[in-house]
Image (tube, rainbow, N blue to C red; front, top):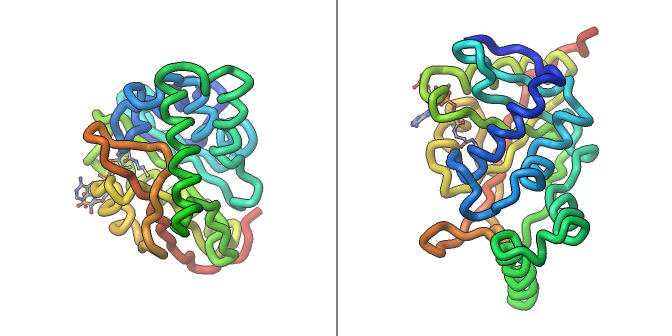
Length: 221
Ligand SMILES: CC(C)(COP(=O)(O)OP(=O)(O)OC[C@H]1O[C@@H](n2cnc3c(N)ncnc32)[C@H](O)[C@@H]1OP(=O)(O)O)[C@@H](O)C(=O)NCCC(=O)NCCS
């Protein structure tokens, strides 16, 4: 296993892994049948704007996972805005699978506002300005690859003097929550319902923000 910085030639592998692991580690095609928009939402900024904060893991010579990072969350694309662009410019709002999620999200949002429930919002906290996404193909899980990517990322942040990092995960993704806790992250705030998203059983999903402070070091070269 090799953890190394992202290269432009990794872009298609990263986008493929993003879609193949997009539903809490499983393929997301059954819920969101459009790989291009999904990868744009969750990997586009990191590969195309901030590639210096991205790392990949090669297992057996093939890119099998990634950690996509952002040092300052204020610069990152908001996935909801990316989704709206695809919804109307590429017509996803009017296709059966994606349209169902989009219009359900609108309805969920209206109901949340009407009933005074919180809506997901970007987590902006100067103590934890960085954030990350990490995903491995199933064959690469459970043997220390995630921990190796995370160490590389935390070293990268500490070298830049970044004070802390956060991430968002589904609270239903229990294996991921356990992994992040093992990596020193802790939940902050209450889980917030994800508009439009549903489990196969129809159940709701919730976003949990997790944070980790970093030891301060002088900025690197
Ligand atoms: C979550 C993920 C990145 C973890 O990477 P990984 O390589 O499988 O994890 P590691 O083998 O490095 O495990 C590191 C530590 O995390 C904990 N951990 C990881 N997976 C665990 C599991 N299934 N159950 C319990 N603890 C687990 C353990 O403490 C482990 O340390 P140990 O092996 O010394 O006991 C990876 O499994 C994955 O990509 N999952 C699917 C996608 C996903 O859910 N991504 C997060 C979305 S927010």
